[in-house]
Length: 308
Image (cartoon, rainbow, N blue to C red; front, side):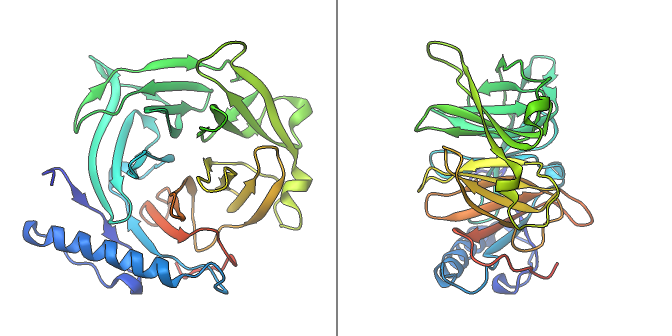
């Protein structure tokens, strides 16, 4: 086990018991116990349960107080990053432990930008800045600073971006608009679609869905997506919106599968990921409480509010 591994704090869930300081001798046992409890909670949280409940909630380290995006690697580790600086944290989300931290940059320091999302595409990692620039790089070792390439989508005037995902079936990057700049699309939920490589124009026509169809009977006046992920089982796109505390699921062709309130209590939901076995992970920035990762069984049932 890496000496740099840091165990994340528990958020006081009764299902996981109280917090105890981890000592070197107890760390492996504590992590194994957490994994077992998560598996037990997952098995008992049936998909047809009358309410959605939290499986686990981890308190993130202070360096991730402004956590902005989540993504899963092919082997199931969770990538998370903050705002402004190109630091990437690799997390064991099932056991609540930071495995390592590395960064992107050059010889004179870490890269700096308004980083808003992260995804994994064909063995490489891509981080998105709010102006639509894609930063592509390979995973680094603990403490390493790795080189990166920048791909400018040239969409900064059309959209303020917040979140990115990779649709491996269609080999497309999905970039949802938090704030739409193109006048003709301002009453739509807009997802730009982009290819890094291949023949022809890398930019496809955006997927645009009328907000009235997406919002439906929900009380939201608008929708400002803060992250997106792809459901490994269905291939559908799952978006969250921090401002509206919303969760949206759509098909790649733009049909709305669900539009509902996020379950639980989320002060600033900025990141989302979905595991192949059906665990939904939501990251919250620090607000009046520390930044957290919250785990649910997917698909969600009733959007029940949990106590803070």
